[in-house]
Length: 239
Image 1 (tube, one colour):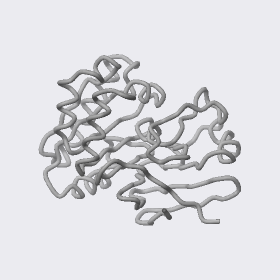
Image 2 (cartoon, helix red, strand yellow):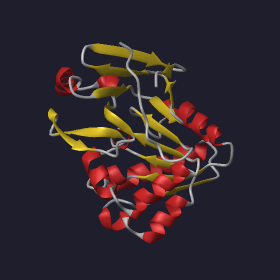
Image 3 (cartoon, one colour):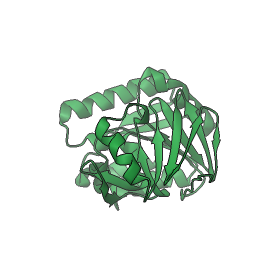
Image 4 (cartoon, helix red, strand yellow):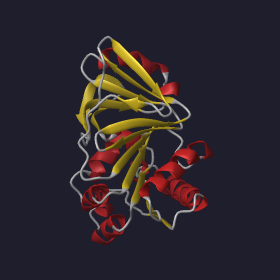
C-alpha cells in the first residue's frame, strides 16, 4: 500500500510545515530556499500567536528571534506582529499588515490555542490571502499542526479537535525525531483512524499545487494503519 497526501490550499502559494527549529541556524538553508522560491524580495511577517498565553517575555523572545533570523537571510522587510489573542487577531490594521506581506511565519507554542485564536478572524483571512496571492505561509511545531485535519488534545490519540484541514484526514506530529515517550505510545492508536505526518526537526514538508517534497536535515514519515513510509531531503511524496 502506498500512502499519499492530499492538500486543499487556497490559490497558488506555498505551504511549508516545519518540525522544529524555527528561526535557528539549522533551518536557515530551508528558509533561504523558501525565500528564493518567491522570486521577488521577501516581505516577512512573524506571528507569535501560538505563544500568546506564555507572557510578554516569551512573546518578545519569538519576535526578536524571528526578526534577526530573516534579516540575516536578507529579507527586504521583517515585522513581528502582536497577534496574540482573538482581539488582536480581529484588529483590521494588523490584518492589513499581514495581507501586505508575501511570507508569513507562525512560530511554536500551543496548537489548540493557535487554532482557536485565528479561526474565522481577519488575521486568518489575511494569511489565506497571502497563500492565494502566491506567497509563502510557514508554520513550525504548533504552527504546523494546525494545518492538519485534527489536533491531539490532552496528550491523547482519542481526544481530537478540528484543525484548519489544509491536509485533510491527517494529524501532523512535529519534533518527530525527538518525540517524548507518551507521544510515541499514542501513535499505534492514532494511525488506525488518521494519516500521521511526522516531521523531524530542522525539516520542512513543502506543499505546492498538489506536490509535496521534503527539505532539511531530517525526514518526513507517513503512517496509517499498518503502513509506514519515510522520505528524506529532496524526496517527492506521493499525492
